[in-house]
Every structure is written in C-alpha cells, then in structure tokens.
Length: 393
Image 1 (cartoon, rainbow, N blue to C red):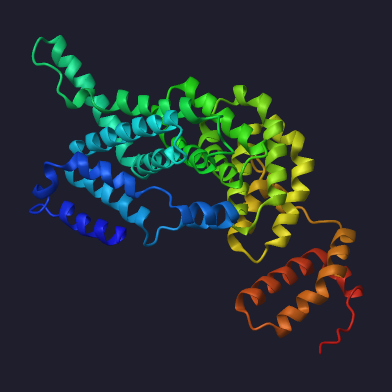
Image 2 (image 1 turned 180 degrees about the horizontal axis):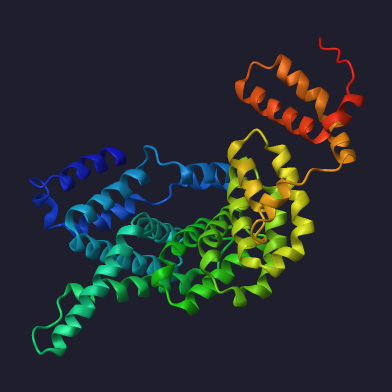
C-alpha cells in the first residue's frame, strides 16, 4: 500500500493546480513520510542472515516503499523550493529528537526512525547541498545590505547551513563508535550517508568520522557496517589530509586485504573501489605494501576475468600511481629478448591458434589474432625454428 500512496501524493505535489491541497500541511507530509521509510522486521531478518542481499537491496532503485518515499521527498523539494527544504530539515530534527527520547526510555526500536531520517537526508543530499550554497549566498548578501543600513536579513538566510550542519554533527557525535553490534544497520546508514555531506561538516568532526570508518574495516563487526564503512572511505579518502592519514594507512591496507579475501561477488566491487582510493591516498605506504597486495589482486582478477566490472576494478587497483612521462611509449618500442618471447610462445601459441580456428565469437577471434601478431612480431625469423605441426581436432 505504501508505494501506491506515495505515487498518489507524488502526483498531487507535482501538479501546480493540486499542490495547493498539501501546501498548508507540507511539514506534516514530510514528517509522516519519513516514518514510512523505516526498515521492516523482515528486512532486518533477511539482511542479518545475508549481507549480499543487503548490498543488492541497497543498490536496487526499483519499486519499493523506500524508493517511492524518497521520490516523494525529492518532489517536495523540487516543487516547493526552500519551503520544501525547510520542511525536510524540520521533520528530520523532530524525528531525531524522538529517536533520542526512545533511546533514553529504553526502546528496542529507537534506532529505526533515526536510520530512516538519515536515509531521507542522504536521498536528498544534492538538493540540500545546493540549498546550502544558496543560503550562504543569501547570508552574505543580507550582511552586505545590513552594512549599508537597509533591510533586515530574510528568514531564508538563517535557515540551512547552521541547522543542517548541527543536525549531522549531532548524529555523528551521538552514534559513531557505540552500539555497533547492537544497531548495525544504523551505523551502516550513518557511514554510507554522512560522507555525502562532507563539504558542510567541520574538519574536526569529519576526521573523527573518517577514523571511525577506518577502524570499523578492521573490527569484528556485522558485514553491513563494513559495507557502510567502505562506502564512506571511498567518498572521503580522495579529499582527506594525507599527512594525518599516514599513520593509519598500513592498518587500513591490511584490513582491506583481509576483507578482499572474504568478499563475495556482491561486495567485491565495493572493496576494490575502496582499496583503489586508499592506494591513491597512500603514496609511500602504497609502495611498501605493493608486494603483498599485487598477488592478491592478480588472483582476484584471474578468478573473475569473465566479469567485466570486477576485472576492470582489479586492473585499476594495479595501475601505477606515478611514472616518468613517456616511459610507457618508450617501453613499447623495445622488443623483448627472444628467450622471453619463446617462453610466451611455448605456453600460448597452441591454445591461441585453436581459438582462432574453432571459436565463433568475433571478440575472441579478434583478440586471439592480435595476440598472434604480437608473438610473431617478437619472435621474427627465430620463430620458424619453434613451429610444430598442430593436431587440430
């Protein structure tokens, strides 16, 4: 019923003529919509037993109550502008306070409405951040006007930057680092969502959040928490202070390598992306751990060579971070010694010939032909002494 109700409300909010029906109750609409975004008992049970299903459902944008509710909130912001933004922030603050009251009272499900609140904010991250920029401009403009002795600052100018930042930082301070085993889905949501708002969070709080994500990767915590921590690190590491991160990188590499060995097909892509971000941040630490990581990545690539997404991710992890200009182009002009070509020939030539003669796959035939051309170019006349008669069945 939930998705159908949201579709009905989505039609009303998106219509200029009908939007007036809900205009006077916009804050209530947003407030109650957030309640419908809560995780169900069935989802908690399923995701607790199967982390792969959790990852798959998180990436699924098809028909569901959560997706429909998020679309309704997006339409509220799109149709109502800053008034819609205010309604979102106001409802989120109320829901946070309610969850806090439930937590103090000992409720077993206090975390669900907080997780739903964070989910709602994250689904609107782009719109909220755009409003932050606009509000900052209005504040600056209003201050200029005040200096000139004209009008007072508008209500809009004080709206978003302080309230949104305060709310996000309260969430981090209240929940990060405590109750990870008891409330894994809340922490998973916190990790994966708060990173989207890094531009409005103070540096000190953001560093604390980043360290918590690094720590979670190496802890014995439920898989959803590690999934969320990986998503946070993937977003935050590229812009993090490298000098501050250096003491933590070797531990992070070790934790990610262990996680890579345990990852399933659903989570492997995420772990590889996170490892790539860590390597790009690591500089000297990355070079030191390369002999350990490379064999594992190569094994991962070999095991998933038929999967274009995972194999590409694995190759990108191994890409050189630094090299002199022109090194690759110059190296390509250098021919390998004949003994090296002979080793490649002995291993590859017969199987590649069989692929050319027997395969009906155009891509395979093209790649096999290019491989033969490279072997012949490297072997030159000496290759004539290597050739044997093939028994092609």
